[in-house]
Amino acid sequence: MKRVASNVMKAVMALISFGAFAQKIDEQRMQRDIEVAENILSTMIKQQFDKRSFFPIEVTGNYRSGYGVTFTLPNLQSGFWMQNFEFPGEALMDGQGGSFSYSFSDSAPEEIQIIQRNQDRAVTQVDKRQKAAVIAGAPARAPKARKGNLRSNSDSLRENSNEKTIKAIKEFIADYGDLIGQLAPNEKIIITNRGEGERVWFGQFNNQSQPSFLSIEAIKSDLTQYKQGKVTRDQLFGKLKIVNSKAETELQPDLELLASIFNRLYRSDLSKTFFTQENTYYERLKDYGVIYHMQVYSSNQRDDDFWAMPTVHLEEVDQATRDKKVKELYPLFAQSIKEDMLEYGRTLKSLKDEENLILNIKMTRCTGCNIPSSLELSVKCNVLKDYSSGKLSKEAALQKITEKKGAEQ
Image 1 (tube, rainbow, N blue to C red):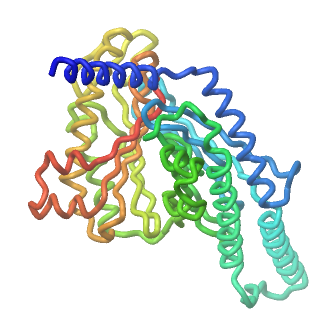
Image 2 (image 1 turned 60 degrees about the horizontal axis):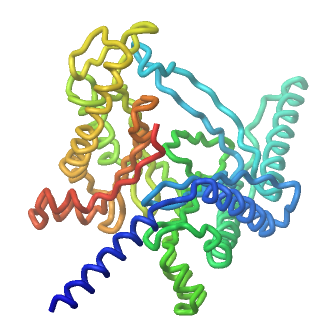
Image 3 (image 1 turned 30 degrees about the horizontal axis):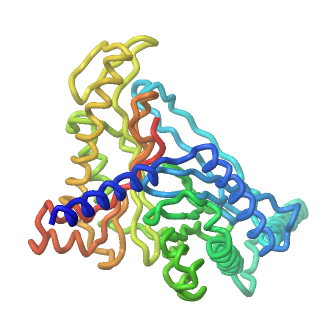
């Protein structure tokens, strides 16, 4: 009996030692592996479009312990003005000025760029004809409708672009995903066209197609089984979580309502933790769900040395006091917004059971506070419905909210 107990204890100690070893990451090696993988993935996507040297694709990878590696791609579409917003308030919030900027994305496949140039050329020719008519004394006429739809052409090219990108990503995961050798069995490889905590608005011009959301996710244990010959290539592809969805622009009352609810709940006069400046907006993604984007703040900067924290009724606090309070408020904020997600997410009526309610939150700035730069919370709509009907307790429903944290500040 003593021998059995001794053997069990040795086995437990071995597992503990192995776990401690497994959690220890060689950061330099991890960064090297990620940079090599970035180059491979970029090259494989370029090969799909047959644009080896003339089609730049900037792939960036980031490892987060316990979660995995996320590779971010550019959005391989043209025709969108990408406007990055920092929302101004009455005061300078968290030392972040209210600014506005925009830039044009020109990193699309050449065939899409050609369509765009042809559209622009056609518009220019119509303008010239109208101006000539006016000079000659004739009234300007609206151009005749042409057969076909420029927007449908752009949509078709967007779909073709996504298909090629997905094909390259699947091949990359199967053939080279194991090059990131330090991933734990439960960690993931995620490849997406959305950056962490990204706050991008897409405006549509000249009948151009809607932006899309692309995400492909693999689990390291599935890659290991494939490399060991335990599953086929097709079986591995079947295990990948693939989201390829187009943003919908039609306004939906229940989605608008929930945005307004969060804007009100987290104004500085109601919130007890962090606050917004009514800057919540949403993206409705077909057959995937809805993503709400929020920016939350902790304070207003009075001058270079002092801060006001309206939600906790503090005035004229110094930097150290402000940062300490931010660290105290973060777990309270994370818990309260999960609870509000359940309580008010029940108002959604237009989503299907398997679709998702997602909050993508850009966190208050606090350098050196060890809080995440962003927080993403996700829950299935059937969980919200079960909670609303009493089939799930609050505690059980909270457990079903998945949490994804950005890099520490």
